[in-house]
Image 1 (spheres, one colour):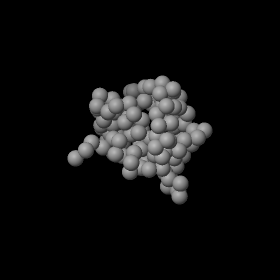
Image 2 (cartoon, helix red, strand yellow):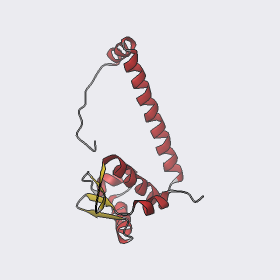
Image 3 (cartoon, helix red, strand yellow):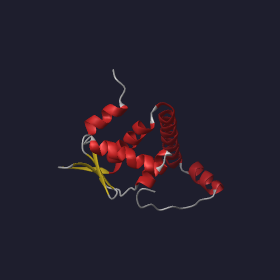
Length: 133
């Protein structure tokens, strides 16, 4: 997990009974599962159609949107992520991620030091993953 989490366990039979007795909970579970399926389909399409650098950029932008906060320096992502963790999210090697982060840093698009990731130029990063009109 990227943030603090609490995990629990419920048997399949108990979950089915709970959902049967509580229609609003069943509807909420259905909405969440539909969202998960949609997200997985998008990720599968990205794997098929985006290059590895584009997938890294998309991941950085998504992390910024979800966990970032704006400052005078840029969009600071409030997670301490190693190259190994980023590589694991992408299915790539830490060495490759390190090289690509170096490229993005040299172009002034991000800053990255000791796991702190800052998006310096969100507009330019978006250009890498947005198809031309």
